[in-house]
Amino acid sequence: MQLRVLAFVLAGGKGTRLYPLTKERAKPAVPFGGRYRIIDFVLSNLINSGIFSVYVLTQFKSQSLLQHLREGWEVSGLLKNHFIIPVPAQMRSAQEDWYRGTADAIHQNINLIQQADPHVVVIFGADHIYRMNIRQMIEYHVEKRAGVTIAAIPVQKEYASEFGVIETTDDGNIIGFHEKKVHAPTMPGDPTRVHASMGNYIFSTDVLLRELLADGRREDSTHDFGKDILPSLIGRADMYAYDFQTNIIPGDPIGSPQYWRDVGTLDAYYEASMDLRAVSPELNLYNRQWPLRTAGYFDAPAKFVFDEEGRRGMAIDSIIAGSSIVSGGKVTGSVLGRGVRIHTGATVDNSVIFDNCDIGRRARVKRAILDKNVKVLPGTEIGYNLEEDRKRYHVTESGIVVVEGHHTTVDIATIQV
Image 1 (cartoon, one colour):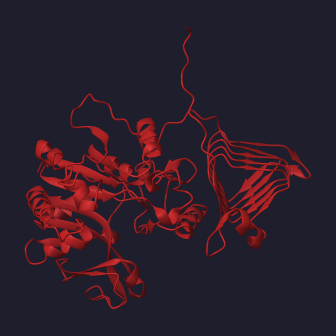
Image 2 (cartoon, rainbow, N blue to C red; image 1 turned 30 degrees about the horizontal axis):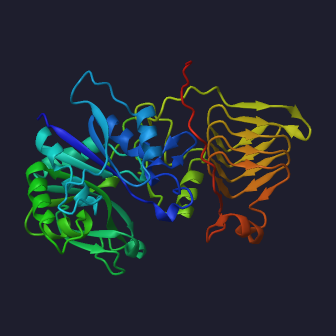
Image 3 (tube, one colour; image 1 turned 180 degrees about the horizontal axis):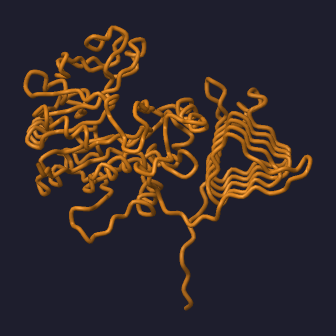
């Protein structure tokens, strides 16, 4: 069966709990893994799954995100059904508001659905770290003849209060929603875990259009899928939970665990970044059959220079992006972005360093996140005295030091007059 599939990526979140990394950028535009952005995960999942018609709904502090989409995700117009297009709020609500909720974001762009006339509409968030073969979820949706399918991930029941929990029957039929409740119902046949919603939905188009129009008329609605539309569909539409654990990524070893992280806090973001350092990380960035796509930077290779006592450029258990130079310093268990400089005698341990940072001679950085363009002066210590660090930087509850970056001006072309 040939299905017409239209995708919406919700990329307008403020990401306030990731401040100061979100001071000048939307959460989906936050760097991850040295050379990527968080939004690259959902867009790669869509493209790798053969879904090429994608609207990206933007809102808060979107300039960095828009620039990244232009640099890395412009799709050739040779085929009219192949596109990735950013869409700001269209002010189509009666109050001419910004997006008021996830459902309102789609409702304000309902004309795009009507014009495309797809069989199904894929609605995914842009702020999680994971890989997913979305084609398999669509196949499940069609097999079940569902009106709505929600991606679900099993989590231990003690974490139920942190998620929207889906209550299902043995065959995956959804019979209830429980938003962040300690005693939410567990999975059928598994009293130790609950089905947590991943916030990723597939709608049959007729169901979606009907519910968006009805919700738009409700004055008491928050216009959110999780809070309003989906709970109201219980008993009125066939809704099923798709178990993310059953998802298979081409090229991954049989039985590989499925990786999904909600990087909504600085500590969660740091831990997800540290996951990449493992010899065999659960999040496999090296599967050529399921590439993580991003902007095509014209970077020189990373370089490590000097090999003498007290001045040896080296990196251990680390990820180093292009154009970075480790010049007589040592990097251990860290993730370095593009164009980073580590000078003689400097050490970087268990840290995340964004693009174009400069770590001066004999400086020491430990358990820290450095935003773009940070210059660490020679001899400076970050992460070794948290009381002092709190006077100058942001320090999380777990002791991660976050150093705010500097946003440079944009170079523009000049002309002779």
